[in-house]
Image 1 (cartoon, rainbow, N blue to C red):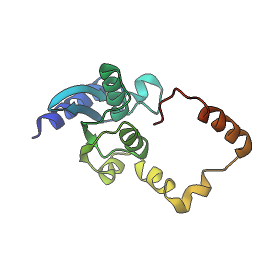
Image 2: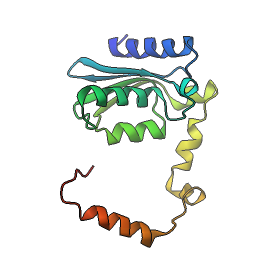
Image 3: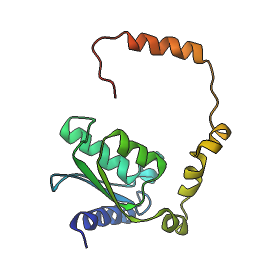
Length: 152
């Protein structure tokens, strides 16, 4: 068994045993060194964004004092949901290793497949409605005029 996946499993088990949430643990690794570990804390924090990957990314960013995790990899017990996958991509994590897939996750009662389906272009209109674009473009233009900023 891969040593980093073993840590992710251990982290997930810790969360389960403490009643924090589902069986999801993650480990962020850079250059063979563990930067951060996290587990699902949705129940503990009453926060649907506290997935294992999100917790590990938050801790890694804090530890490295950056939002850019280029050069890092993530090991996670479950295939990342769309939210976590997006966060991984925004963080510039370069490789994702996962244990169970979305079918396995659905089999234990989670509904990840629904979110993948909703994010498909053909289903976007069921969820997304453009509103007050002109006012928001004015805000964007204000931001564009700021000279000293970081663009992600």
